[in-house]
Image (cartoon, rainbow, N blue to C red):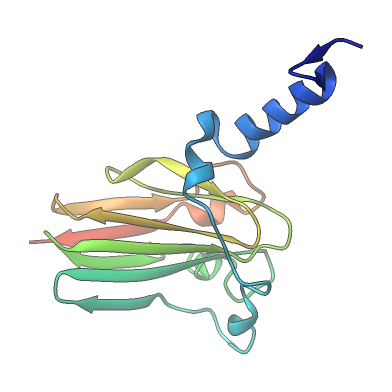
Length: 168
């Protein structure tokens, strides 16, 4: 059997494919993921209604938490966006010049979800189940920017109406 660097060719190709496609094209996203607790949504299970956004705006920093969840969950879509089909949801409001920190937590049982922000993070990221991603940027442009799932998924249509509002 042919080998590459002492590894059977078939296994070598499979490992390379997993590295390239499993971590995001060219390995970019492999550096941005971080592990979540073993039960990343355990703290959320006691809620009886669809949540708003965990929001903290202290001086020059605005921090938000986005929960991505399966159908049937109180957080279905992004922070319960399934329950806000006719209005933008989630909505994050910041002031121009603030540092914006968005923690994205995928609480889905088996499906990856995407996350992107028009103008600020158009390349998006794929967050696998049980993992999280933290996006940090400077709100340098006033306006309304779409927040959305950037990949195909079963509840994708329910994750297209988020909004980041940057005011002067």
